[in-house]
Image (cartoon, rainbow, N blue to C red; front, side, top):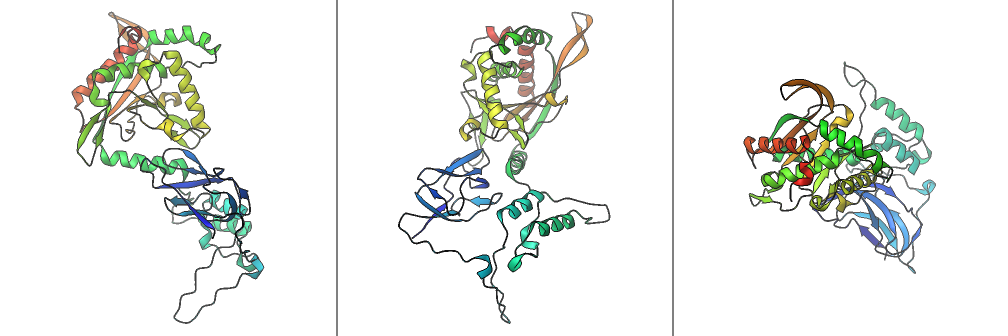
Length: 390
């Protein structure tokens, strides 16, 4: 009999995923281990292979739908099995109502193009009365329903309903989880990074000729690593069930990357062993993968601390939300020229705003403040990044 392929356990506590794209269709002959769909979990977009060779009899989940672990994704008929042909749309029997008995739920008739349009406009097909053959929903029906959805819902004006899906849905869930499980506090300060600015200006052209785009992020990572080595409570996570603090003896820094669909956090591992050039190249590679949604799930796991650079978008100070299950996150703001007192003289310097959000359950304000001061010290005197031992 045909084989029902269910969403397998994807690990890391993942219980569901959104069907992002089907790469096969009903009637296709597929091979074992052939990729049949892409599913988006709370970690990354995952390519799902078929466990069987055969013919795709039925696709049970539409693109954009949420599938839970154990739910049927598709049905596969293996070689030699008889496949019962589907009735054509014209031959579909109409539901019959009997007094006192609810009619059976009827499948919504709509082509893939119509379903795709409905998802794009955020219009549920269930509420649309189809005007096509045998009550099928047409594109015109969807457009009319969309106009109704965007009509004024109250006395204040028009509103549009957009389903929370994809990466944005994942971000929303993770941020709420972080806010609910941490006692978060944000401290702020500024760093005079004029010397670091000059160092980068001197070196970036030579590195660019070698295909490496040198940003400030590799220096931020190195500064954070050195400060974490002196303040291990900020390089940790909390096990809620066992009520214990897990202090990490390794340093893997997550770097928030803006994509068209929202923020993702690739992880830079073994920062202790890597040079500024190696860090720059890895950040460049992972950022590109993240923006193209080609990053692998394992490249976003195992972080111990996160850095987010909102200064790139013109922001100065902020209150960044901790990337669960980390216990701290550093936000870097827009670098600007400011009057600064140096050796008793007012001079113009390059100033970097910094915001550190930490979990107050894990450490106190004194420890967090000293940590931030250490980060500033390394950024203000970049030579220390290369002199200090691991």
